[in-house]
Length: 224
Image (tube, rainbow, N blue to C red):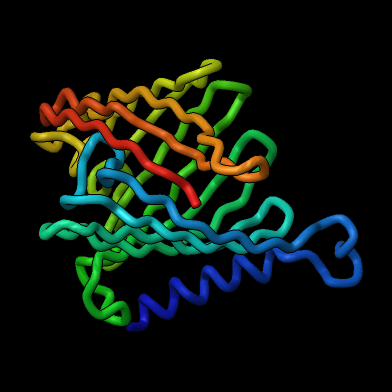
């Protein structure tokens, strides 16, 4: 419980730190809220498929300037449900972004058990090229050692005119034996389906292969 309150307090502290002063910076920074829902045929993430059936993935985000804080979730419709509800906070410095995510997988949220994981991450976007690094660990661990008690994941991608490609590598949960290896080779594309003269439906699709586990998956989704 104390650890949960500590994390919540930390997120609020980040929010207070980066929200601009109402008098001095109100004209320079804009507050905004965003919410939406993605519906995918399968929940694919970093070389793995979670649950069965379609996945409903809602999100709510508050942002001001380059700072954002929000929540994201995923609930499957199949018998093997992959329940996930996350909180995150992030800040962008030009092409570089940093974030902290609290992953929650069900149970009593106030009991900081094995269902909670923390992940600091950093990403880079230079034109059509992108890269990211993430390090997930249990917050109840004491004296977490970098690279030893956390699951590392690195990914690089490039967007072309009509499709994008990505290559990811990691250890721990991402590979079959826990050793560092390539775990995510993917190709994706998207398009807009006209519904009316003023509205179109965004549709995206991904083909994903995990050479370490042998998993091969295809998913298509819409964004509302």
